[in-house]
Image 1 (tube, rainbow, N blue to C red):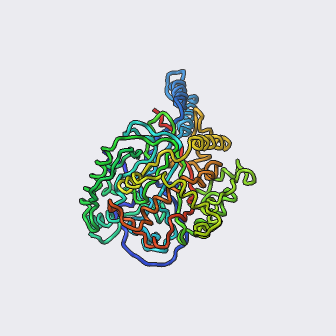
Image 2: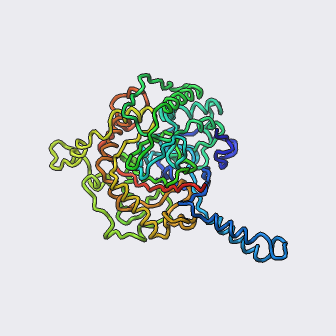
Image 3: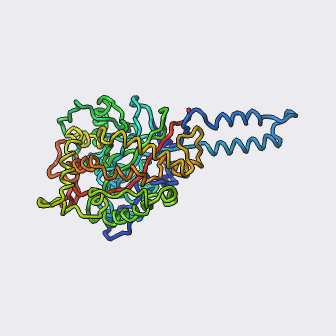
Length: 498
């Protein structure tokens, strides 16, 4: 049971936001769901890579600093030992989760929310968040891993759920409180009305080979009550609980809907780190043009994307664009908008590279995966990345972190050392251009799998059997084969100190 006292205490007291809507262009500014926030709600836990830690040293200092020779507390030696204890405690590495949130403003997915709660022109559309697992999950479905958790099935009702809560709690006259402000395309679950949702958060899991999609599509209609929506989500979560649990494995590729409430859990109770590489795509459309042009130029100089914390520039310090910048394949050039897809997709094209890729990997995403995604708002695609690539990227992460002064595999990693490459918030590690990151962004299987999922969701020509809505107003302008990149970072969550 998660009580409201454990939720974000940084939200605006009382209050709600008036509903207004105007249309005009707005300057480009967006931060992903992994953006650092000084007002983060996540619980913080002390972590350590092994049983060797500063706590033993603290105990020894406490023993030395208890009483002076004359039997009285205090004294100069005690004063110094207390200072030493405090310094050591401050150095203990503390990592936190991300807090439950959406990667969208669910009241209107197709406009950009301004801080005055009016709307400007949409300047970003990323159909899915996705990630490569670099480590195995744990066999225990209830054990926290510091990894992805979400509410299965919520994505189907997300766009209707929030107006329903406004009708129930605010007489339909205002939006819920949006606090803290992370970005225009983000909302955090931190209000008293959200408390019941925390009981429905689950770890993600693989799709059993014999799983069959439910035959009944019972998504409540638009305009239903909060109680009807919650009844539906509870039913889907219970159904999800009855599916045999198989944890994610390294090399798996995980997709989840931008309307799925999710978080990195606030603890890692495994005996090993949890790590992923966030790798996603945007659609080739004018709404994403400014972003992809910016990413294209930053890649050439190993500059970090504007969406993320600008204080980190590790690749520029420990790598060289002359030797470490990978040349782009034909697919890579398309993904960075260096060249257009259109000539390559013509029937008489002399270069059929894209068509060959899609035909070669047409079976990496099955109908079973697609149905599971519709029903639960996420799917784990098994073994999409080779063990060699996953192992290599993990090695690069530790190697280049060490070159920056942060030994991730050290027995006594400190906060100050970790901050050289990462933030405590969500254990996000600010590497974007490690060699294997660059390589995987051009991976054919990951591209082909995403094309197929997009073809069956936001770009689908007909409704899906489970009646999950995917209503994109510019879907007719999209070709699911024409993807651009969204450049993202990594995660490295150490096990918590026991």
